[in-house]
Length: 98
Image (cartoon, rainbow, N blue to C red; front, side, top):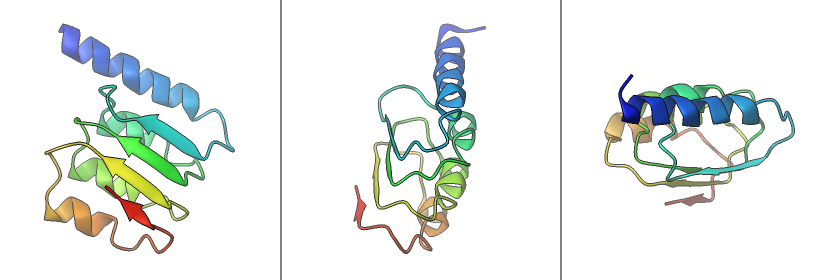
């Protein structure tokens, strides 16, 4: 396994560990290498604040669109297109998007 793939797998494993905390409301993984797969592991959490980093794509934004209570999202990536933005358009509680 390449070093970058191993690092991403490690970050995704961390996300799977965080998913074990059912009341977790804030996750800041903006410069960690978290991928869309790791983000999907968080999909059952009642997240209100989410910081994401450079490996998140439109597919990950579909997961984000399912966080109905999300109030704040900060995304640092160039891999999101208009399709990814449309995926979060229905988040009615969202007050801050950066």
